[in-house]
Image (cartoon, rainbow, N blue to C red; front, side, top):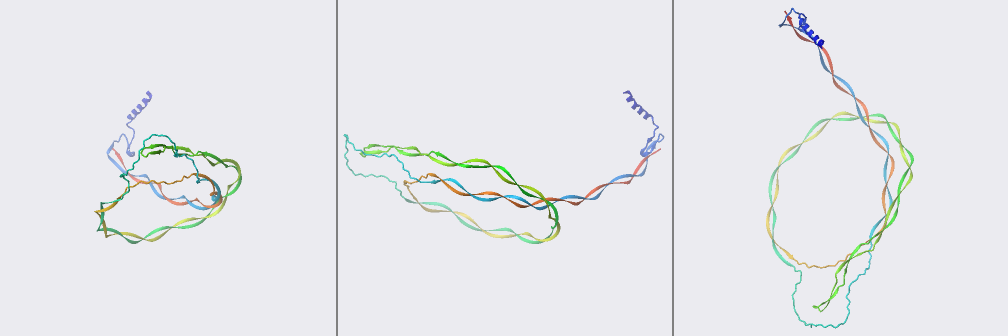
Length: 418
């Protein structure tokens, strides 16, 4: 540690003691221990200095870009389309046909049967004495009566007024002008190229498929008959009426009895599916590549200048005046006398007959037409588009950096020594 700190200290002492060492002046002027620098007198002169400068120059460079042209070619392919074919088959269906039938039913009615018996009864007899009397009773009879009343109503009476208004109409004024436009004219060029196309060849093979079938089975179902409600009157009774001096029959009450009709049988067909295997012959197509030479045309657009005349329509405003009528409705009160009738309605009872229809199933057979699509193989020509690459030259201007040297005068001032 002491040796490290001692070396720098000795170096600083040696530099302080060396006062007679030569010192470099400004711009190479030597100063010695015998010369004292003077700061107020300087000597200036011109020196040529070499400087590097940068200059940018424009340079044209030719480059190439890739342009893709769209070329159309015809290609023959095999297409399978579905051709509709009409076939006929018989379908069994069930319709409900109304069949009217007459039935007879037996019901019980309480019929009064008179039986003569004898018995001894002690009674008091009122001997009839006939006397003629009159009484007044009221009957509801429709009587039409005509009445009058005054009705006030308001009527709108039209009143016409004539007015004027001013409106502006734009009148068209046509001017003829010319303009120049550029049209690209197509120039066609014929070229050749090789095209690869594919031909499909049929190859036959056998495969096993599952065929779905089945058969119809007849099922019979019994359907219970409906429940019918009918009205039955209970037997009545005889009572003695002293006012009429005879027995009067009073019928019994009417009650509702439910009765179930006999069941009916319904027959329907049910389809039972089945599945079995079957071997069929199939044909598949294998594509085989082939090459041919075809010609195609390339279109180049050449600009062409044309001049056309066209008309410009300018609308000039024009003021016009027209007369029109305005209808204003003025209310006016009026009075009129109207006649009306008053009627009293009498109820009337009517009896109507109606029929009840029972639907009876009946089997029918009809012939319906349906369409089956059959696959037909055919050849079809389509257009295929592909892009053809080509190189197109174009010119690009770029700036190139140039470095050159030149002499520049520099003024240098040196201090003088005493």
